[in-house]
Image (cartoon, rainbow, N blue to C red):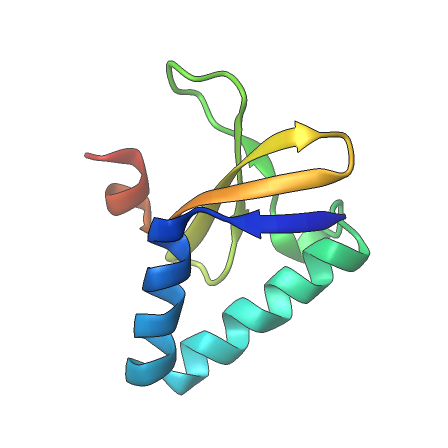
Length: 90
């Protein structure tokens, strides 16, 4: 799977790398796993039940997730990263 990052996500990942090396490594691990096997069970991929039906997410940790949209069958664009409340806007 090819991946791209929205500018907001790219900036947030850079901020996390400066602030929390453990979380940054976890993000890298999950992204690499997604690239190799997008259906791996530890990613806990699920379609989001929002007004935008094309959104999916992967779990980085139990409390952090990354939201993405499929551009085509081989490319995912990650558009948001954060806690459930940050990502869902609640």
